[in-house]
Image (cartoon, rainbow, N blue to C red):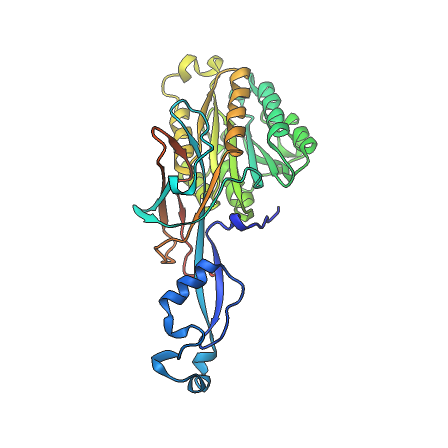
Length: 365
């Protein structure tokens, strides 16, 4: 697994500023963070007297004055795609066209970019349970084509298949040929050892489609240590049978990893009948996972619509705005903070993650 470092990819990462009381300089840090600290601590700025008007030579005799003060500044990045009322990508917006709210409170945008070349880290999850038997070849063709089309240098993708268990069949790599071989190796309900993969770490409970376990493993075990733009693309009918974890566990793992979940919802009339079948929970499950993480659900009914769905995801991944802000709520309480992104463009729809988990007290990074 990699850790990509670039200016716009520090998502809710703590930036520690070592500030010495009465000192004359700051280590390298963001100008915004330094200015914020200066504004709140005017008596400690260079060239001014120290605490409670004491001269600098008296402060030197105070041991506490020599101890560094740790200030945590958390930059939250939001990757947003904007579509107009005709579902076309809106690519000409400026910083002033956006407004970000956290828990209903407007935030000041500190960073804005429309960089289509930022690296992407993808998790491609393929349902290989019995209900996918008739559509698996089409899945393999469309997924291979998608990777050849979307991947660029510095992008990484892994492949997981899931049925009776969740199996990592290709770890993060830039090599499309390795990924394609992994995709082509998928068969119905095969043990991981039989396709050269790694068995999942969650024991199977005897079911046949461990969708929630697969998403949790992809986000918690793999994507959580990655930086930058992260997405999980799931090809499935979204009917879980046998996962040890719940749908909420999968969603929370994605939220904590700052990953969005896109579901290509495959409906095989031969299995569920036309319209998905009465009582089929798949569509509602897919909608929850996508809505709660800022992703999309695209209905797929045949190989042509599957290719179109991949094209739409590819377009979105390469048409994102990057907005960063320093939260006005500086509490390190580990709570979930809701994010809302608005634009001035009439009738436009914004696709972005719906929130993040704040750092906890014990997570000084």
